[in-house]
Amino acid sequence: MWRPPGADECFERVGVGDRPALLFRLLVAQRCLPFGRSAILGRFVLTLGSRVRPATRRPIIKAAASDQQKLLVLQKIDTEIAQLTHRKATLPERAQIAQQLAVRKQLLEDYTEVETRVSDLERAQTKAEADLAPVKERKLRDQQRVDDGSVSDPKALRGLIDEIEHLTRRIGDLEDAQLEVMEELEEASARFEAIKNRRGELETGIRALMATRDSEFAALDSQLQHAGAKRETVVEKLPAALVTYYERMRDKHSGLGAAELVERRCTGCRLDLNAADLRTIAASAPDDVVLCEECGRILVRTESSGL
Image 1 (cartoon, one colour):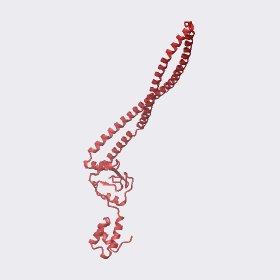
Image 2: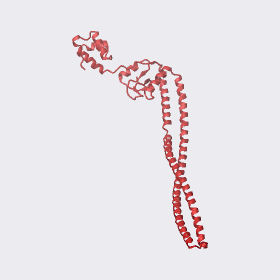
Image 3: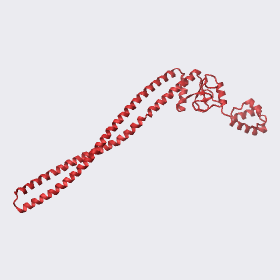
Image 4: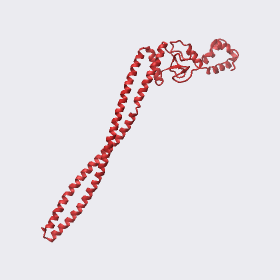
């Protein structure tokens, strides 16, 4: 890349890693930049500076290298706790129970509707029987009077026979209505029994799913309790400031606050670090808490880092 005359000497005195505007001012202040050529070299400095990667972040806090490596143990436990919590929230039995309860809700509505229908038809059948009985009794009495010859008056006999014919038609109408009610009642009763049986089977299945869910909950709760105890043991051995900073990083980066640097790659974002960042990290003191320039997580150096 072309450099204006005198640029190399100025860069050696100032350094190209600084911000472009500051570099330009320093060049002028140190009399490295002739007045007449300031615009040309200024544009060159700004262009060069825009291509320079920002310097690696300075350590926010310090912690012993052994404590930093314990963060990986803590992170592993926190990842386990997050996975267990997720498993508990997404157990397939929970979705199945919710689905079956929705089916049961609709079934109970049908159950109540059909049960009411059966009850209404039973009352209608009882009323039909009550309406039919006195008509039959009256017809029977009239027929007996006709048969035994106790009515001798022709006009009265004619009236009695007409009444018997009317009662016969009335009995036929009542029996038809009674038969219709009986058929509807039989159909409704059959449907009610089917819904009742279906309800029983469904509720048995729901109880079985709930038992399985509760068993899974108990197992997961036991694992969560064990993981929580392990976490407390690790946290007690770490500096409070380091734990606080780690928790901030975890909240900021979806539960993953610390990652190991393995073979020059951050295991948090799975990206390789560039040579400049690796040199800066390698030159950092062992107790410097360094961050990944790509994802911002705490970057823990180990023997596998490849520095």
